[in-house]
Length: 290
Image (cartoon, rainbow, N blue to C red):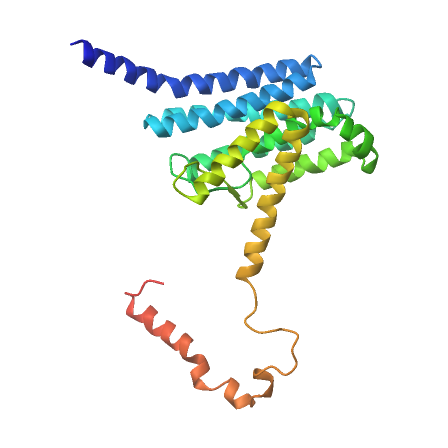
């Protein structure tokens, strides 16, 4: 009787564990808001990062232990709306835009986009294996915005980057861009899988080790550039894929094109209309799937 009870107790602990990580996510998200209101902006930024780590862990544990539930998914989205929507939006407002009369609308726009993105995620992708995300993930957007402040306090930023741009305006543009990307359908890569049986798995291990090393040893220099790189990578990849899918079959700048030298009667011959005729026949038949 002892062994079955031990297994039952272990099963209960595994079921509770994802919820505990989700609760920790909420704890650090709320702590970030309180710290930002008190002026401890660097602490608030790193609390949001910790919330992001806990958000990754609760999902991984739920999938590995097969203990994911609809209740857990809904709770996770509600917590993420606070940790990666409200917390980063208020943090940016407190350290940069607090003096502006209508600047809080930037935070509202960002928080609204984060909530919409999480609601859409629950409808489209929650509970399924994902090869990519539709739209910029809210944790990535939130951590990128949050870690701007620690990066802006580094010697690199103050000595070489401070005078290159009007940073309050640049930060506003970044907030709007993150808001639009979260509600877009731009595909963003998931965290690479780790393993030793394939080159992709080895790359996942090397990538993870590099990220952990950067996060532990140079966090102020690492997180914000890494977040910007992830955002730009998703945009560039989507643009490249879209461009390759729309490449013309012939050079549009050539004057000696084959069609340009063919008689007009050949261009409007019945064989050019064949696909349309076939399409009509299929619709009349009613049994073909397009």
